[in-house]
Image (tube, rainbow, N blue to C red; front, side, top):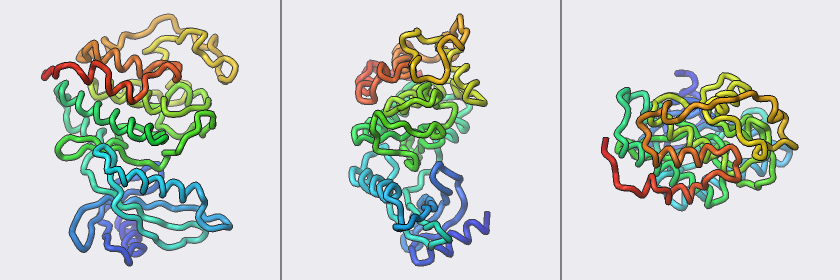
Length: 310
């Protein structure tokens, strides 16, 4: 730990940031808690190693960094702020860079763990609305997050959501086939598990899983392998109609699964009201083309009805 922090301090000696401790590792690099030596402000310092090609920094890395800068200009309340970008040293055929973000103390996974008695329904609804609001902002800018999970949703001290870790975000083309090893297994949409083309609906599926988890404090689909994950989805939601199965493209055939019964989400999460159940089922639709959009979700009756403070 100490050696890692020391290395970061050495490589950012020309900057105004001092690494204090290692927070964790995200999809795109190691994250440190740090401070601005001039102002004392606490920040999150993300170290990324960019493989260099014969022309220098690859264009995809340039686009990713430009994307972060572009998002930051909007100052969206549910997107973590990018404060600075520091160039580190070249190590072999890699360039070390540091992205400086605002520091938020907890992620949603920690927040759930620190509240063993659960949350009031009004608090859950506010958290869910802000998650959807942040995702709608990304989608409106043609960005798919692709790795939505509680660990990538930060919670501020006053209980507001900030979407983080855009290392896997891409400007999308609906027909492009992207690697299947992007979204954490428990929040992975069926089309990703099947290795098919995908776009913004994968984020909606992840949100549906996270909403249920906020009510139950337990992951909805906790498979240990891709096959087991698919089995968990079918066990809870049932086998989709044959006409919704992408028979021509899917490596797994519809007939391969013998699922005769399904669980009732109300049984899994008895504290979920009918309106949130309706929203979740619109998010956890097998066919991505039939899944509700983030924009439409914001107008769902779950977010429009009178607060129920229980």
